Amino acid sequence: MKPFIRIGALISGTGTNLQAIIDSFNSGKIQGKVIFVGSDNAQAKGLTRAETIGIPTFVVDYNRIIQEYKNYSEQAQLPNDFVLEDAFAKQSIYPKSTPREKIEFFLKTRAIAECNLLKHMNSYSYDLIVLAGFMRKLSPYFIDHINSASAIPRIMNIHPALLPAFPGTDGYGDTYRYGCKIAGCTVHFVDYGEDSGPIIAQRAFPILETDTLDSVKTKGLQLEWELYAECIRLFSENRIQLVQKTHEKDRKSVIII
Image (cartoon, rainbow, N blue to C red):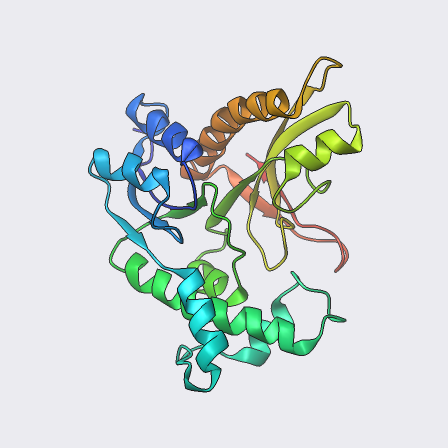
């Protein structure tokens, strides 16, 4: 019998990757289920997708939390287990040359929001967290909570570019505007940087002279739906192992067994 995997999903938008994951469960390609869907956006259409089929949902309003911190930072209640210097030392989203106050603002507001996420998530027993169009960067505070009891990372993301090229929010757009002849998508584990975690798998496709940015995005999404489900299946079957870095600056990678 195939292993049964319990997935929690975080989204910000329409949830098309979420739907592809749900479909992979319904078809029997993967044995498991999505046990909750969380979002930073109460208007995310993906929440309706989940609610329609009985998947529990919740929302953590990042915008409100950030605005309240801006207005009342001295009254802000940081999580009791949040250690600023630890998070500051680990994070690699911002270069160390960034003004400290900017990094501190990010880490503190994220910790408040992520503590709320974790409170919701702690109601469930899950094996893997998938980011399915979740447009918020995660901090060491959240990542460490999820990964603390596991030898393998437990947060997976899909990115619309062939990493390490074109990290960030507009992978297909950056690829297309740069004039690349090949585009693609990447599934990777999340680490303390921006789209810098261990790569699990990638899929590529040619950009034709007749392609537009919209057609590139359409082609990419089709591959994303297939690739994400495949990587979740591999994770559920314990077929993903981390490869140790040779040098500190090397990107971690994985092997499929």
